[in-house]
Length: 282
Ligand code: PAF
Image (cartoon, rainbow, N blue to C red; front, top):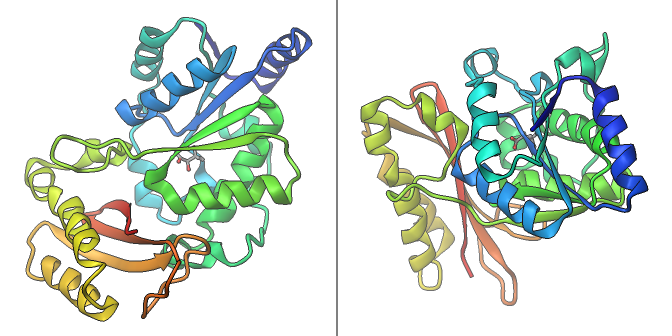
């Protein structure tokens, strides 16, 4: 299994693959891989000649230093997990300097407004950081297809916009959310939950499932209030936001309209650990 830190080594491997007309499936990650990542990699293996997985905790997308410092970093374990899927996978695990050089800054993107909703409101600069690192990674890896989980549904829409803006030819593939048996959406941050927080966490998906059931018959105002009540007086979980939004532009709504697709989005703090989730409503 090849593990490269240097951009020039990946570029050299990619050049050979391109000459051989091989398709490249790309799974960008921040490491601490879980079954959700592995499902993306498995799909990429099925659909491409070769798969590249990047493992890079991207500093420019963190608005919270504590979150960046404590983000789990487990490269050896990640490589071991990937090699169980296929020893042909190429891992790109660069340093920040390798990606950003001496100037670690984000490009100021206009993603058409999606960047200002939900995660954008609560994590200032986050999507500029995501857009910037993916622009650099896509340029280095030159993938045919890139794979993203729908847990970060807003990020998925941002990435689709990014490739339009940057006129990149990569095809963006969204993949379903992978969950614990309890319903908790898999996330690298789950590794930081203590026993009490982990036990409390299924409430997040249970709440979304109930919202999905009620969406046809109850008003958005009633649902919003009900969700907020679910987290009141909870010792482990604190609701940061809950929104019902149009799936097309992620604008939050007060009233439903006919023939429009909606999704519910939620962000919750378990102590200092931030968990997000979402569900299609119709
Ligand atoms: O979803 C993630 O893990 C990150 O935002 C990504 C896409 C790897 C960019 O750093």
